[in-house]
Amino acid sequence: MSEPNAPTTAAQADPLLMHDGVRLTVDNGAVATITLCNAAKRNAQSPALWRALVEAGRLLPGSVRVVVLRAEGVSFSAGLDRQAFTPEGFDGEPSFIDLARGSEADLDATIATYQEAFTWWRRNDVVSIAAVQGHAIGAGFQLALACDLRVCADDVQFAMRETSLGLVPDLAGTKPLTGLVGYARALEICATGRYVHAEEAESTGLANLVVPSAELDSAVQDLAAALLAAPRDAVIETKALLRDAASRTYEEQCAAERAAQGRRLRDLAGVGE
Image (cartoon, rainbow, N blue to C red; front, side, top):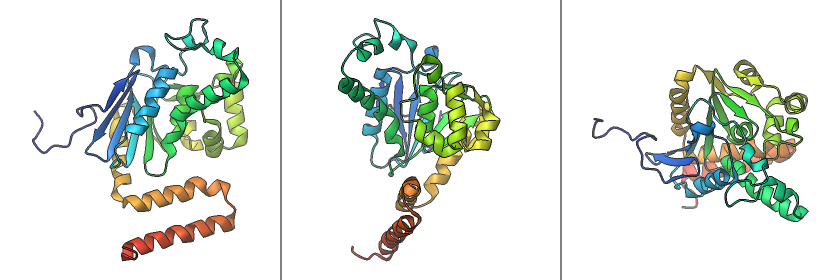
């Protein structure tokens, strides 16, 4: 039996969401854990799972500062469920074959809705951490890239296999990948579909940290605790500065820093209250 005042872990907390292979729990208000929980299918992805991820983002309480994305089983995510490419597709869903036969506008709009599951993780009011073990293939790789930070087990295997299927990575993963490893390496990884293992992931910046598999959860907890140590507004402003830095000129970034620091100083001084 746990102690009366012991903190509730994500595993113990009542889920705010649990369907379509996704579970959302919140630990003590500040840390949310989103778990891919279809280990029997190696957390293969589908449009239903993507809608559940979008819903999880919408359900986050305002008190949440850190979002941890993890997965049950031996693999983080084996990528898109190949059933999407069969004529019958998923129950109640158009198959990708049917989508391809529709109008270009409808296809574009549908892919845009899929991408929503991969874009909200970088919003400024939270810091997202992907805890990645085993295979993170295709859509699984892109879901890990969707997060701000990645802590990886030493058995991790990233691969972008879309080109081997005659496709391209289209779930918002190409920009963060290029930002992390550079154009040439990103092109080589995507065009060859080869595996990126733990040592290379850490040395190229794909992984912020690589730890033994048994230490993955504790390493993520330690990182979350470190992120919570700083005042929330300072982290939000810093994340916004860094996230948009690549799209600004040097002078524009300096101006953004001045404006952000002005807001922080006025807040600390109680000016305007």
